[in-house]
Amino acid sequence: NEIYLAALGGRVPEFPMEYGALEARATAAMSESLFSYVAGGAGDEATQRRNVESFEQWGLIPRMLVGAETPDLAVEAWGHTFASPIFMAPVGVIGLCDRDNHGDIAVARAAAQTGVPAMFSTLMEDPLEDVVAHAGDTPSFFQLYTPKNRELAESFVKRAEAAGYRGITVTLDTWVPGWRPRDLTTGNFPQLRGHVLKNYTSDPVFREMVGSDDPQMTVLHWVQTFGNSLTWTDLEWLRSLTTLPIVLKGISHPEDARRAIDAGVDGIYCSNHGGRQANGGIAALETLPAVVEACDDRVPVLFDSGVRSGSDVVKALGLGATMVGIGRPYVYGLAMGGVPGLVHVLRMLLAEAELLMGVNGYPDVAAVRENIRRL
Ligand code: FNR
Image (cartoon, rainbow, N blue to C red; front, side, top):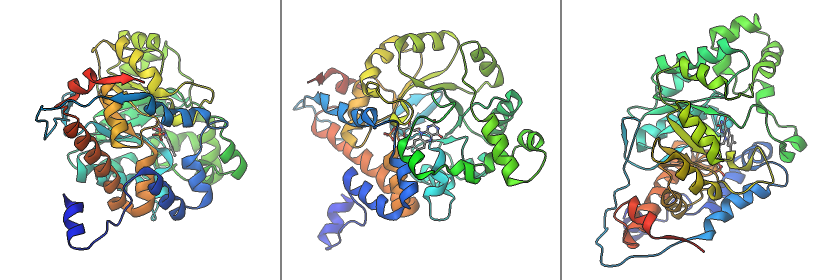
């Protein structure tokens, strides 16, 4: 309605209305190496392309005479009511995607403005306490890249708990970055230049580990402790760190989902990291139905990787996701137009999803599930 009314007054929207144009605007707004870092994926990026293309293998069948003018898209999970089923996936380098290098705080502001929750990466440009303070009443999750040093891991989780995060997302697929030719070619590793490390340098355990303010020592210690390739036996320890909900990110196999729930986790996050970690895989969307089945309604199932439009959001919900994560599109929104650009992208996705459900005669997600078909 806003757009139609503006058009009546002869005004053209400031921001693009679809992903292709959005990506083009972001390319122009970012340095070449930063854009490559965000856009790139593992290997020849076949998995990344497949993530996006897989949505075209599913189709929605419209139902008529239903009267679904205002579809219900609210979600209940972990004791919260979320007004919308989308969330902002954790994006480590997002601090740099804002003109003033405070991208995480910009994300938190957008979360406060829209009610769309965000997960904030361990690789935040600002300390985790400063970031969550800007998210208002919208629940935030802290995403843990589990360091090798267990005391440091514990310190991050305790800080997140004390700062008011409502859950911990533990990312399992990235204890080391994948083979990403674009970054290997440009040599662009922001962490190694000291970016996104303030969340570490503001940590008492990390400061004690480094023992000096020397930037090179800081980076060296960061590299040494960054990623712990966790095993099943570590889950008990993770569980003992917090009473907050724990969500495991990077689950693709139904057996892994089942075993994780048996071990006491509170959410399964089906994702292949947007194809950034491993090439040669199947699309994340192709893994979703079996993961959902394995979870058997015991815990919420989150999903991301390849979502580019409102219809993609609806399809992922139709295949059983409780909530759908947005990755690159919102990063581009931020790079293109700061908080207003990011808010625009979220509202565009939600408006398309809601309108699609309305015109397709789906009053709720259950109706999508009954009317989605593999093509
Ligand atoms: C990511 N992702 C990510 N995931 C995570 O758990 N911790 C992190 O720090 C990051 N960092 C990160 C940086 C950048 C630049 C991107 C694009 C992605 C992965 C992210 O959470 C999500 O899984 C993917 O972005 C989803 O895929 P699409 O939608 O971007 O294709």
